[in-house]
Image 1: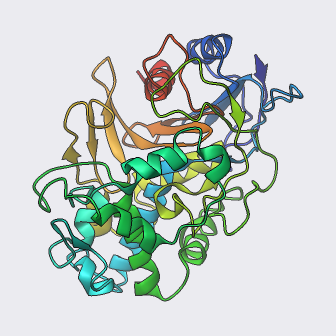
Image 2 (image 1 turned 180 degrees about the vertical axis):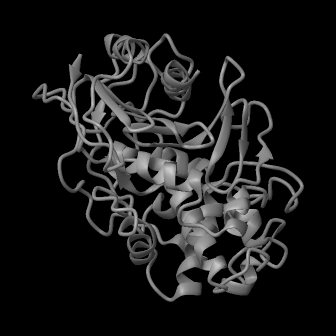
Amino acid sequence: MHTSSHPTGDATAAATTPVAPHVREVMEQAVRQGVPGMVAQTRDGDRTCWSAAGVADVRTGRARVPQERFRIGSVTKAFTAAVVLQLAAEHKLSLDDTVDRWLPGLLQGNGHDGSRITIRHLLRQTSGIFPYSIDPAMLERFFNPGFLTRRFDRMKPEQLVKIAVSHPVQFQPGEGWAYSNTNYILAGMIAERADGRPFATQLMERIVHPLRLTGTYMPGDEEELQGVHPRHYSKNTADGSLTAPVHDVTEQNAGHDSHAWTAGGMVSTAGDLDRFLTALLRGQFLPPRQQQEMFTTTEVPPQTWIDGTTYGSGIFSMKLPNDRTVWGVAGMINGCYTFAMADREGRRTIVTHMNGDWAPAEWPSGIHLMTDVVAAELG
């Protein structure tokens, strides 16, 4: 176990110490069973703790460090939702606007109707739009061994939407809930139309700079990670196979013209995610009306996403085994998992990341492993 210390996202925080033993034990157990490395940052008020298990690089044995940057997958959705909600607060768009209002004619076919789906439906995952990421060809390209040769592919957001509408809708708008990356690609496209600037520029000006998130960004055309970072390892399998070979997939395309972008393309750090989540929970950069929108949730049907959760706009609540409810964000992208969770007041938080995208035999999935780390701290 490697431990270290650093200042939290809160500048007034005391120096860090190792996280609690029960959190470290879950991480150490996962590493003993084959996960390359895990980190956890916890905060209780002004007291911040940080620990790591395993390594950042299996070839060199380099240790993971607090300031490192890593891909955050679908944690990106909370940033995207926050940008869109700020645009709503500025009356540059309305959450009641339809997709057709901003992207006329794009969302049509197989029951998809952009004149009936609103921005609110997109943010809450209640649109019924098919998720392009589970299209069979996309699964073969990005979540199977094909990823090794296709991970630098360029795909325009419009192409992703076209793939989605080639499949039937999942349900009529507002009549169900289903997780779909297509919703958040459309939200990013609308944000660009409404503001007239690239999403990455808005992200920096609206969130990253005001919150002083020094390690957070949306990749552009580059395939490498900026700054100090762990290697990201993948088994490149959609079925959770424990016997698949491990590959280094640190370099990949996750920016604007990729399969991820505003649904899952961002990069951040543990400290930045703590600061961002705390700001979300405390309503520090959304007016009350938009803050209420973000935290108005829909119950997630069993066995469709993360069990025991309700989903708001890019943020969700989760019931832990002891019936305590926590709030936060979660993401997976080829090579890693990220969770950032807290109590509703943002006083106690945990951010955890592992630089592998599979779960050891002890856990049914990577999500179960990550929620066990969260429960060890907040449960």
